[in-house]
Length: 114
Image 1 (tube, one colour):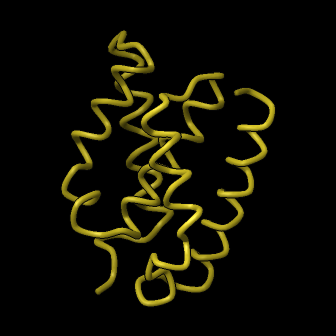
Image 2 (cartoon, rainbow, N blue to C red):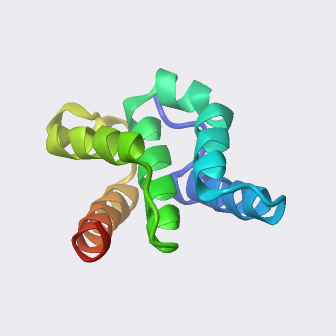
């Protein structure tokens, strides 16, 4: 079963929503919550989409030196069990490579900020 949209497309939707919610004057915590609600279906329906959603939200928040503890913990759990996530079944090789690069970027950010 393939994701509804490719990794880059899903990532782009999240980035646009993130910026829109910030423009509405929401705090980063509120933006995080709203994104998790907005993408709830993807989170519960697919571990791959869940990883992409949490990873994208985390990278966006970390750029602003912020990351909610629950999001960080959930993402860290997914990363530590990455072999259980059916990346090869659901994504193109190019998308898998991008996800792995983004995970490294996330780990690098974590080391600097938190």
